[in-house]
Image 1 (cartoon, rainbow, N blue to C red):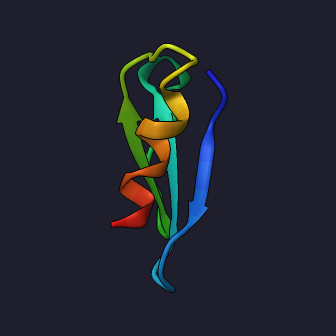
Image 2: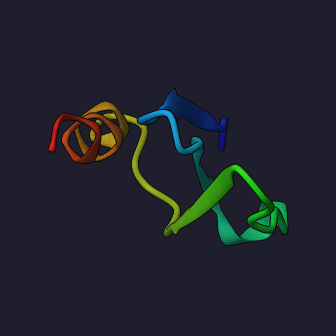
Length: 52
């Protein structure tokens, strides 16, 4: 699954990744783990939280 990233507020960088990537949050980087998704709904699942 490709990673989707977004610049958040000035406090850091948010990365959506599935659990198989083994990415960990670090200073200024927040990793949000998601379950594997069907490619057809991935844009919706990854876009909606960024708009909130």
